[in-house]
Image (cartoon, rainbow, N blue to C red):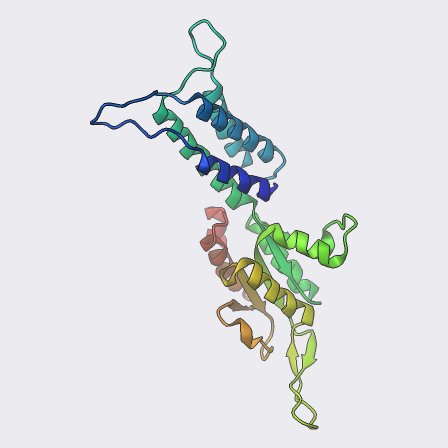
Length: 263
């Protein structure tokens, strides 16, 4: 699913200037239909159907059926013996736009991806990715994506901007400490420097509420400049999975209620 195209389509439908609904009390001046608006809505529904064809969503077939029915309604021919499109009343067009926006919002919630920032703990990375998959969400791991002839930073930027959330895995892969004078520093476990760098990138790109940091082990050094970011302990019982599901749901990601009950 191309979320940029989906977002552009949503904005276009929202900005569509349909005539105001006729007053229930006063006399309505003007036409009771809007051919241009009806054609625009029909085209938008058809475009959405095309975008959905390229996506693999759990409820894709349901959304597809609704979009096809809506497009058919907007493009239905009149029964006056001609092949012209039946003119729908203004109220029906407003209802059609509301329906279309509701479908597009649902599709957006189900097609959003999550970027997984990780260090060298492969077991932790695989479990995080499997958990997202269980939620019905694509977990993006940089080295698994195609290069398309791009450098690593170009590839990272491309994939990061296609995601709406980031799960950052802090595993004790490095050791470091603050040097004071000539005294040898006391070393503490810390995440890889690239993990810390990418944490900052996603906080700036997506905002703190769209970043979830999973911390493995005790005593792991945490950057002091990132207060407000959600930190969760990576425990063997897996209680972090419920917290992650709640955070994702709060940010508009769709997770099947039946799956949530089992987390």
